Length: 275
Image (cartoon, rainbow, N blue to C red; front, top):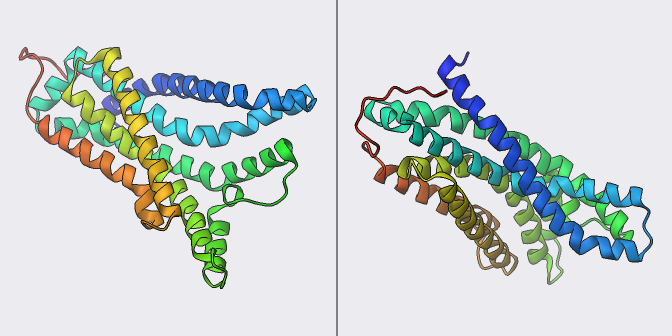
């Protein structure tokens, strides 16, 4: 059973997570719709099919927006705790910071597990149906396969004698590692959010917006660059897809290490998570 303080801490994450997830997903879906709807309208696609088309785009969009929402939520809650003095009080206590971060990372791991299930099973099936609606395509691409199907396809490609067999196998393995890495990003981004909250406890909305924009942009660049390098057989699929998470972890640990010691006002403040 969770103690009352931990339950209260985790409850503070629920509303920001829901709000940021819905907002981010709506923004990305809006961009996606702006690109695809003119084409569907030109083909005379019925409104019901258009709605189904957009709903099918939610799973692959959520694969990106869930980790993003985790980061925004944790950073927002920790900056609020900093403004209330709870972080300063925790830093003065032995294992106080650990007691704040541990349950948050555990919750992020649970979200990561659910995200992995979605990435592994729901996203491929949604993508497959989406391709049929978009162009009537029936040939399955790597983004329409589950993890086990991708692994089987990679093994089959590696035993072929075709010139592009190794490259095709690598593309399948990249997709496998991407599903794992995007899910695991929930934990790494949660740690990064907590680390920045500790380092800049009174950052507020400006810190959340600025840090989110910078980290998401850098993460996307690393992910796309890694995929390109793996497709060209420059690096292994594992290195390509986990490089962004490794850099994020290193940066977060560096920030945590530099944040040791009290940085907030010295007044005696209690660790009132519910403030």
